[in-house]
Length: 263
Image (cartoon, rainbow, N blue to C red; front, side, top):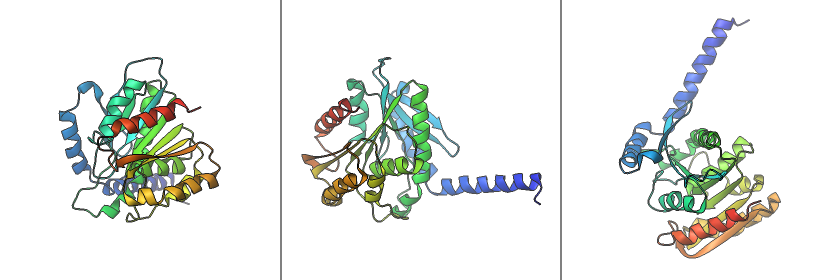
């Protein structure tokens, strides 16, 4: 028989090992550097630091202060960007509140340029922890409906979160320029994720997007049919590239129309 004292010690060691492994999966110092730049140019009232069991991360919250509004957006950036990235992320987080959609753009874990980009396959656990914390943040502020919007790797992270967590805390997801990121390890199968997810999905990409986003669009539609998800909607924006450069308003119009039609 293992004594309770030894058992407690073993549990403590396992917890330390788990947290260390999570910390090793991303570069906290590099993330702090990125966050410090964002802090310098962002209004104080929008800055929030959210604590989790494994990290403290920067979030940017913006609202029109309409107390009657019960729906809010969590924005997830892509690889090589951040919570106030000038393409897609910043336009969405700053303009959606004008349409009664408060936004919480969160900083996802990053890997320093010196490391292999394939290592981003190890950050999903930390991503999930941060998304959970962001949901709790918004719930405490009184928001009852939560929608995820992810761009690129943020879109993939949204799908991983919804499938892995298997909870009903997300009411819809917008996937912008979704792709598989075949080089990350362990690999993620986007189509299988779509087949498993039943909540409303807006799958949106540009006609000049990255090749994989365009080429796999028919397969994503087929995967949604296999899932029986009648609330999957896909749209291609003509002339838009991966970053929707100079076409942010078109992107926002599609998101607003879709959210207005959510049940």
